[in-house]
Image 1 (cartoon, rainbow, N blue to C red):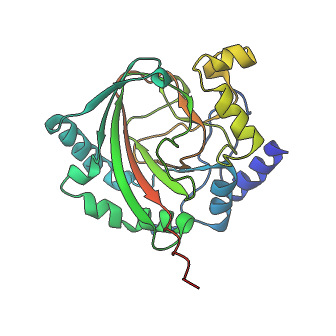
Image 2: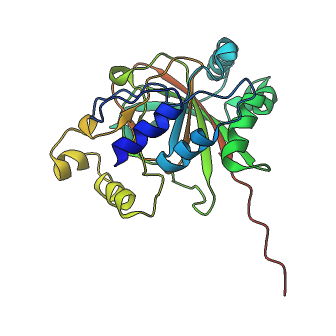
Length: 258
């Protein structure tokens, strides 16, 4: 059923779907509709159903400038180095608010390609959360980015990988449908992946062989995804660069006093 649904949605968007194996590579899922970035109904359906969307070349025209700004911030600002179980105790360097420290940060947030994409998913009045920049010298095992996030509100990332990435060099892998974080499916997987050795202990396969879609990308592509979607990355331990723009849906208005 999931396979047929994926095929129908991707065909409508002009993409293609590879065989759903642990090493599958996901070709571009959908195309943006013009330069404004407004998503089609099918693209919104895809995102809301599966928890992610690939927008090839969304910021390709500006990726050299974006990359230069990213490198300048890392060269001139202190980063926070983490070694965590989820990264197999290998180092990751991160700067919170990396984009906000660059001179042209407001320009990117106002870019119609970004505004159109996020408005299509979160509606008008969405909030901009601090960006983050990462240098990965590590793999990332299966997890969702829900730590500290308000689960009562939808949150969306636009992730810009600044290097060409394949399944073997750290392209992000997504588990479709795990954005429905209260479902038995997603809750069971989060439980089984609590320990980085969980995939082998529970399922008898290496963590990189868990069935998922690999979103291979070129600099300038945008991976748009729900914070709740379970994801991982393997083989990209040589200074893999990531810039993520983070957004929250508009907070609910307080109930009027009776």
